[in-house]
Image 1 (cartoon, rainbow, N blue to C red):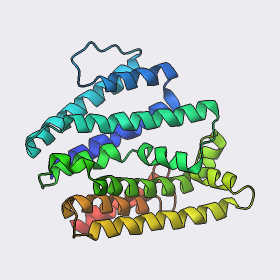
Image 2: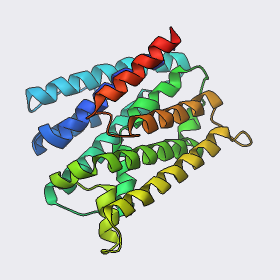
Image 3: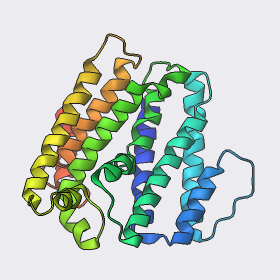
Length: 266
């Protein structure tokens, strides 16, 4: 399982870095440039980076995507590189949409926000390539199966809502769309922040229940159980990560949890 763990870890680091680049660091010119470079990643063409920052990030993406794509293709017996590139393309487009909303001070509807937000939660590059490494040979058409897409959507929406509830105060000050603030706004004054959070907790729980139903489903399911377990385990990680705070901004608790697991296993 080392290739699965390496893919998971590398893409976890990269998604965090690229998310920060779109959120805070990059100029509009740099963001467009990076998107264009990833759009032509499969093509044998000259790479024109508009800044050193874009060059560094693109080089990391290019090397990692090709490395993981080559290993996964060898393991599966057919090329999956195009799929992995498309996962990253979708993620960058969702990051760009959020950057545009923030720059324009636009207020999307809750439906628009979640349709984009489950992708921008950035589990795509973390979970989906790892599925190729955990054992089963997947049929080439499995990524088109509605069950595959639903597993990804459910765990991602659950994570997005959990994240939003913990990061609402910070994002509200920054003027960024957040499911809590959007729900309060759509309530027209009838819903408090705490009321909105409670509704989102129920929505996250319903998504998690539906995810578990899909994971346990056997009749008519094309997705191997080992793959479905990966989505469920990520859901469990997310609930720990956001149980009391945002695990990114309060890392001490997460370090303690990881240390406990390591020491208990030893």
